[in-house]
Length: 271
Image (tube, rainbow, N blue to C red):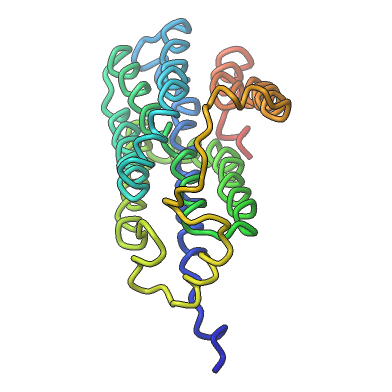
């Protein structure tokens, strides 16, 4: 009997949803930057106000990543990631009806709260659903979505703003995440054994390829501060700091700078 032919690939469908969640994550955090020149004019915002609005996302995002990871581990990634995407999608949509500085500031804080859960949840899903030899592959796969989302966001959003308007653009972009949440709750199961469509052979591939099953009492806990002893951790932190310092300029202030200081037309620039 050919068991390979009967082996499902449910874990890769889930990997596709993980990838899509990160792509949506980066598109949603970029909408404000593309719309900023229009918001500044229509809502009478000065550069200092816009700076606080853009920074608000990072305040909540950075502070809540560890708590968001704990929540997903405690209550499951189905609830954790599903609620997170729904939360940040609603926050994105609500920016389309913002009336001024205070409402935009609150919504950007809310966006950071939701988006903080994306990477911790995906890491937990990779640990549950993939054998060890595939874990680096799936991690690289969903991280590539951040680059795809960042690359496609600006031209897509600028086109939508000029085709519709900035308010409707926020509403449309936010609704995409809600559609993702619906698909997530239909497709994802907390553990491979609980999925209705997975084959026994795929479950064996996953479990046999994992060195330790979840709940294995031989796993020794590690204090988080002990990670600071490793040079690799410091190297990654420094590397990501320098990358993010540069890349986030492009998805925050660059569009406003080009429009206000250089007189550029973003509709022409995006191509």
